[in-house]
Length: 418
Image (tube, rainbow, N blue to C red; front, side):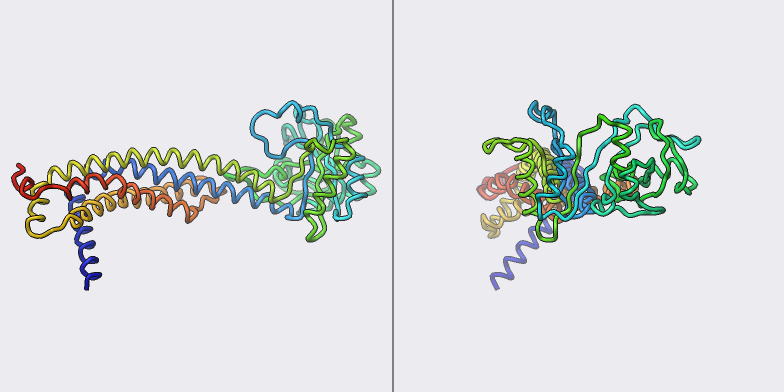
């Protein structure tokens, strides 16, 4: 029976709170505006970052979860590189073959070289691509990088060995140079070099915000052909596929081989970088976490501003309803009844602000999805929970002082209040 009475008391307090808020709609809206903004910020930023992260995960994982990537520079770098990084020696082709020969946990690998084509262009008749991204690879790159051929074929070991002038086009450059299709068998000019197209690649998954995947802009040519055209190119990037279930062993073996070849002392850090799908995602997660921390700080400011507004409006409400409080106490209302009523009123006020913020955020995200179809802006459950719980918590915390003040009023003095 006491439980039922308590539930009825809570329901009655909520009903009174809603009636009071409806009676002062404009004032109530201005009061919860800070709460609304705080919730909107939390949900929107968390959703965009969640979609951004999922795009990165999809991009990284399509290359293979057993893959290892080796380069002299960090794969995710914020700010300027240190002097130690800038002075690192490039990874040589001999380093690559040493990894192949002395790492039993490595199933296959391919070295890659990027051509210095930032001031050049690729063309076919009237169509052009500025600053073509030309990469020299070995024939097994198609397996290591999980590339899928759309038309034609990949080049062979014989073509690589004999420096054949052939090229495989990424999806976007294929469409740019051959908008009507039919690229295979045609001859294009890349930085002044005539290359015959022998294959084209399927489109890779798009990047964050629908951005183009870098692999779709590649001109893949045989490794030795690139060295023939650009003999000074020597900054190797290494893609390795480990044997199934031996990823960690492969990383340890590669690390030991390269430390020994690059003369790294036992007490010195690596002068090269090794990354996997998991480590790349973790590096990105660190960035996301930093952004989320800033977002939570900003949302906290919004909640505080809203909380101060709630406390002020509740203090005004206590003053306006002093006679009502005195009358309720005179007919038997206890202090906890008055305290509960005003706490529930403050909490309901903030909860309404939280619900409005959630609805506004979902509407805004729907508009973003229409404008940017490539962005997977899905709201994580924890963002909704944090936003709504934060709004309710603000009501409880900032409504405590006005509620306590109302509950502490002397009924006789309250009834005399004009």
